[in-house]
Length: 576
Image (tube, rainbow, N blue to C red; front, side, top):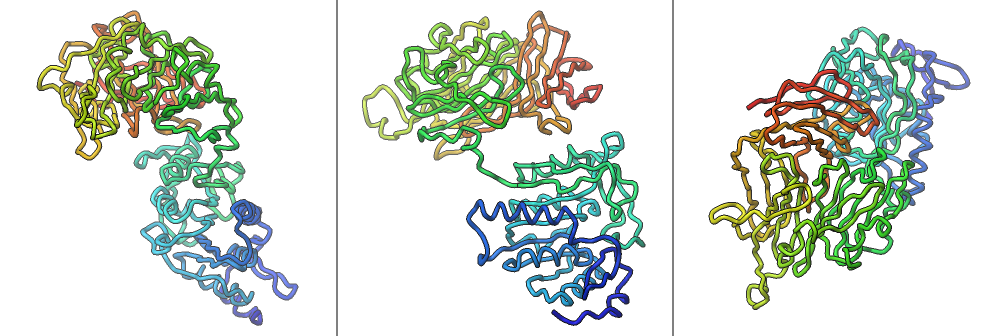
């Protein structure tokens, strides 16, 4: 350790942080070595290292964003002497102070770098085992971009920052709500940006999810702002984001697939309407999975007792894709799976409380689907009559079938089944020259109103070929309504997991916002409703993942409307 030069220390002042040298106290009253934020990070990071069988003697890399005066930097360097710590700050005074403290403490495993982390930074071009960010984010003008770069550099982020209270959120930056904060440049801890953006907690979580951090823990939220931050901050979020990153919890959750089944498609959807998302999995040549959510982070395997594991005659099927929708308008979500050729494709009617019945033959879907080898699938109201129709993408797995007289081909046409009355389906004939007559080696299928004209289109992903776009050109005068959902602080921003009910023309329809399903595809997350000849909406109910039930009104039909959780009015995006 170098000899401590108290005169040099004073010359670098004033100091916010207090330090002990030779049994004497120097500097301010704030003590980094007793700060629970850095101490808790150290203990949590050590636990993660132990869980991954990494420990002392192995090279670690830690990035500290905003080194202030070197207080946290010194604590981190002493706690992890085997690590290389890159400490970054844009303020020259902070770097000079940190350099003096580290040198006086005999610390040699820290690299100090001057960079503006609000901009593209060379620090983020490297990979780290952890990023420690305490007291910097609320100084940044573009926190979302900073977090996006952090997500590319590490899968573990320790964050402590100041956020904006919901009532004070008067600004929308991109998709994020919050407010601006004008810093006083003369303050010792300012100097990063003259104006920063403070997001709400919901927007901050959205930023983290978008950056790729999928496991987020809120460790502490205090009403009292840190004395080192903006004096009028509404909330101070301490040690936010323990264990950020991708973490495999499948064993703990009870969905680890110990039997080694061949899952080809899956979807999270509330099949028993208890307000919690369950998990359905289409398995190839083995029983399907249905996992019921136990409300505690674990799932119960009810595959057999639910009736979803096997076909009506108790057979395992070679399941490929899953469709999710309420085809009979009874308010319960039904399931449809696609299978191999020489087997029918299976419609499972939801009978309530997590029980399903195979009604494929009764619904008229079995016999017409037997010759085809099917993949992507989805419920869609292609003719806007208020009933969910069914689309199937087909294509064989063996090109050699074209050389054999097996009654099938490598390339196959897709199939569209019109829902007649909520009980029976009839195949729409593949008219010559139409998209339904296209013979292709299809695999994935994604559904959505690509042209915002009120008609659901289909994009097919073909193997060894370009995609196929099927534009919906039905023109029957039926009406429609599309809702784009924006979740609040306690729901996913994109509304995944929400259930939307629309009552019009004497019928109540249900659409679930699902990201999975089909096969190898992700569809439009907007909820589309065909209204038939109905000219007005009687009621719109939204059951949000947060547990909130919201009733909204819309200004009219034949339009796309944005609905934000908790907001009193819907916003029309586009009309026809």
